[in-house]
Image (cartoon, rainbow, N blue to C red; front, top):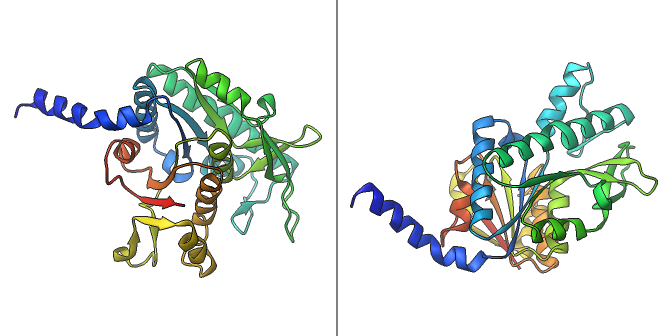
Length: 285
């Protein structure tokens, strides 16, 4: 088999998946350490452009914690975290908004557009897309918010007109103030609200393990019931908790399938969508 026929064979094998997801909304959450490598970021954006041009409707939600911490260090501010949440005073909130809604968001938009896509960058403040309220905590976290409401009309309009929405995790409060909201939770809420077919959480580990230190305990498929039990038993902890919670939120809202995959693996997005076995951990109802 020569190289040309191998390429043709790959395309033919992808046909059932292209048909299955043609015209369907797929929400992709991309962030954290999986975004640090610029070549990898461009590769992920190229995969999203490919999805768009074969008829899928991707929505990209992104975080950017490492980039926020880097800018804070430059201005002499030390990040403080409580239960995985960044304590966000007024000055830190300005940095968060500058980085997420500005540098990071527009950087991703620029890459997608450079690759031939039509991306539009949004924060939760645009058209009141993400309305938040102050997060409850024993310790005052400042401008850390929780999702109160998603207004998806702008996303639906953009998708219908052939655009790829790219959403940062800055939300608007009841008095017009900005809130820093966990991007995982936003992805779950948006996936549920737009009735996405899939929610894909891209992180920097292969998925869920019953014991993270024992790679033989990898879990390829997990029910919501078992996922909750693993959170209770602390088999799922730290940064994986909001990702699993987002999957549960999405499934509760009618999303068919949710996945946690390693975004540092080249083309992991395509391997998840265009193969039967996929990669990572799938959480199902």
